[in-house]
Image (cartoon, rainbow, N blue to C red; front, side):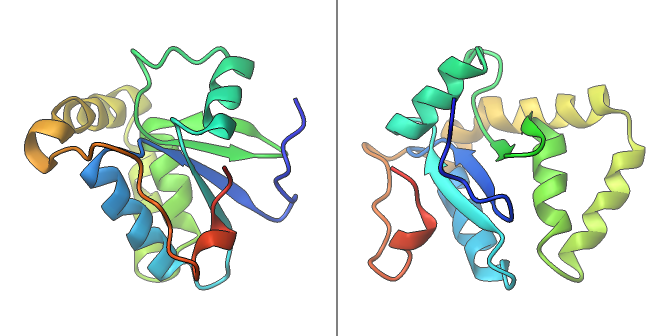
Length: 139
């Protein structure tokens, strides 16, 4: 599978109907001072082709994925911490949580992911980026 993601970029795949996920994307956009990230909803054509290519079980991994051309896919808490690493001080200090075993980090992550619609709500359709942000999104 060949994705049109430049080697210097990282692609964040997110649940496009989740309010928490959309707020998180807006947060990353605001703090992505080095223009590192591109975005696509899991529900998009690009998102679906990545899910299919990497045979991702969306019943087990249904929230955030990070794709980089050199490393492929990372997900859950590891993806969130890798994203934070590029957001500058003090957000990049979150990498300290890599000392916590992955199974514990992912347990917390899964608990939040499982309850995200109940706690934060859900949209009827994926967000449509503004014209200013359009270049940061893959369809």
